[in-house]
Image (cartoon, rainbow, N blue to C red):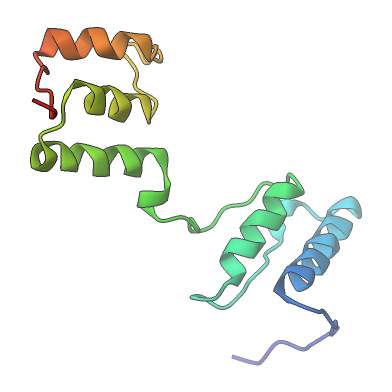
Length: 134
């Protein structure tokens, strides 16, 4: 496979500036008629570029796809899952369970978000009564 020909080189102060220049070039191509789905912004894996590219594209409201730059523990679902895994070990009391449920988006069977106020009622119904202070 032949190496691609370098058609242009830029000078940038840092990764953020370099990515902003690249995104501006992509947007200029889009304005000139090139569809976004026919373009790619590639970078080395395992580098800080993935996070910066995602941040700059989101700020510019440019749709994109690629691997997530966040770990599961940094998402609402991940935080709730980690909290659920701690329930048995810490023997959560009612307030801890209410706080855990309120930390994520909990929905009913129809997919409607449950109001946080209903969590205390549900913990009583479930029999979560342990008070760690006692």
